[in-house]
Image (cartoon, rainbow, N blue to C red; front, side, top):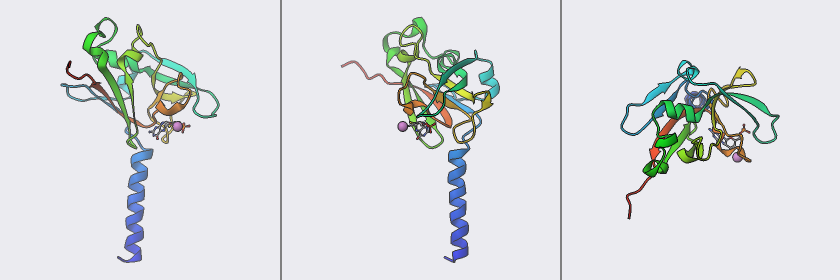
Length: 168
Ligand SMILES: Nc1nc2c(c(=O)[nH]1)N[C@H]1C(S)=C(S)[C@@H](COP(=O)(O)O)O[C@H]1N2
Ligand SMILES: [Mo]
């Protein structure tokens, strides 16, 4: 291959990799078993109750993060919650995926207001501005985490997963 073509080819591959990691989707896909996927954009999220939290990753200064509570998104999409979160539903969890393939999960039980009541946000604003491209436009914020490993950046997909196995 000529040097010229090699350089062009490499530049293309690098640009594609950069775009896929730095420019996550402007919307989040929600997937639940047995239902068509739903695309949630800023307008859809704006209809849910506003939520905010303060927190920081590593030694960063504390920021104010705004968006919605993950639990409110799940509730509006019909995930079992509150009184319906019992029995087999307690084996369900939520898997969040980012544009770089990074994934984290949260159990419904840890999020439910009557159970773990853990505050987890799907944030799209930081200190009054949209979250910038390297971390956003959507990021999960988990103020309770001592290490910010579940603060997944560039969220693309949120899935409800049934983690149960048949009774032995
Ligand atoms: N998409 C994505 N999100 C991610 C990670 C990652 O590799 N990919 N790393 C996590 C880890 S291990 C940490 S500690 C924090 C670091 O966040 P910061 O870069 O804002 O300090 O992001 C989390 N979110
Ligand atoms: Mo980390």
